[in-house]
Image 1 (cartoon, rainbow, N blue to C red):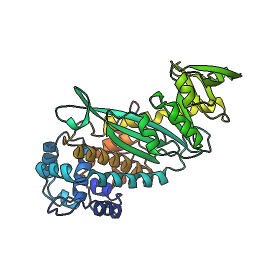
Image 2: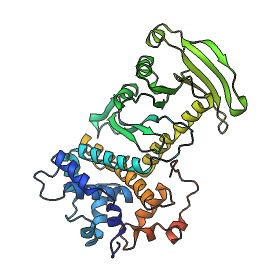
Image 3: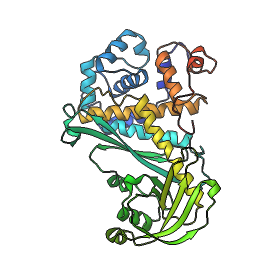
Image 4: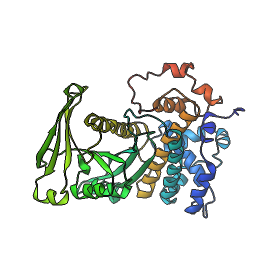
Length: 389
């Protein structure tokens, strides 16, 4: 019920507070805390994400301007940038990571039946990573090379529904191939990834475990064709071959046959060559599976553009990971609210409207109504939108 509450308070009502408290108790987050509890810290950081604050001083100034409205939004402590900086520095980031997984599980159930454009009964996962460059002088713990620092976000996305995911944050120097097996393998499922994850010894272990993979082929891969099949060239297929590796080391690492498929994308005209260990699915379906993987790239593009993970509020590893996990939680919360309230807008639009109406006293459905002047004023045609939303 509205009863004069702000849009921000109504948005935060969708957070499972009981689950958050469990995460706090698990890591003793509020142990010896006199002011600014972990939940208040989360609310303040969520406000910063939703409104695009650039610094701790910016957060402090804006929140103090709202006065008594903060109390009714759940922020009972006087906001101070030094207190918030200490909280980001010392509160264990793992509790926010665990809470993000709670929200991801909740969203997974809501989006479980969403179609991803490919008629496939088996589970399909897309694996991708993105690197966030940092200043070496400010973030020495994330050193990659002599004059460079970075961190990486690794994400395993279930294509159907788009939310059953595993997210890992590592230092930028961690190789992508070292992460794939840590994310777990499900027998009978398809794993789609780019050439950065193509290592034949690991792929053979995946094959022996019963999992299927679809990957771009490297240009310098040494292969010998054994058989060729007819393909439907009008659908964009160029060739379909059964091949074996001929390189000395690669042949030992993967001694079995592979399926090689050539495909030309109708939209871009780009020629793509895929390798897979699955010989039963139609060749066009394999190509469509890889195309469906592009939605995970849209996710990374969206989160880097619209969530505050470039301008960090702290320089320690704990502060950076805290901010990233809360950013991911905010993204998933927006998706949950979109589904629960049956909103037609994209996540980008919901964020834009929220940033302007967070502390307005109005029903939340009124704020996001398509007929509202604010919703009509947003030009949505050129904004990135994730598939399924």
